[in-house]
Image (cartoon, rainbow, N blue to C red; front, top):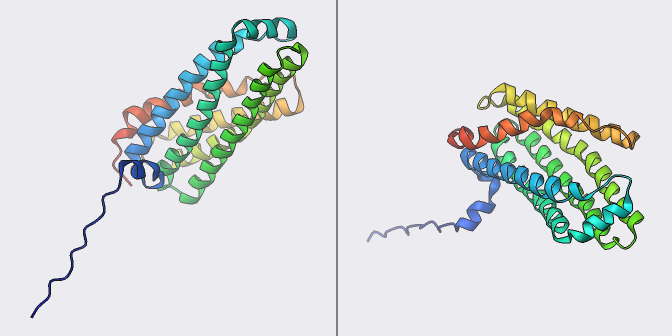
Length: 235
């Protein structure tokens, strides 16, 4: 009498489990997630930081800065909230770019991802000084000092982000599925951030202009990820 072997029925994976399993994302999923994440980060930084925080700060004038923030408290706090969301999105993009570039060099891609995660943590720590500044509005000098500490800590931490971009630039250059020019542009942006971080670390009055040189590359990569990257089929 023959016996019928049991049939193994695979257990369906929940959509949530699939989403969280970023190391196994396909290149198209990684490209789409990172492209959307980077686009959101750009919008949030422009609207939140440059639109909600920078206009309320008058360098060297603690009294006016405190008064302007007090009169536009929701705008300032909204800007600070945007910064924290950007830091969280940094972690999402780190995971997505790990999945995208791991076929090129798994170890280097993982190293780069952890560097970006550490940067995101430092960015949150820097942003906490803005929260402290809001709590110190009754003492304008200390509030302005906290804001200045945020700016310094942020720029210095961008040096770590610069190292990340240099590594990603190398991976993009070697990838074969991305035009080499993108790798070059990302590396240029990375070296710019590193130069700014070193300059600010040694001089509080250093003009942070080198990081802006990579703006074109950082914007171009968003369009590539959303338009061409989402069509990738290679593993």
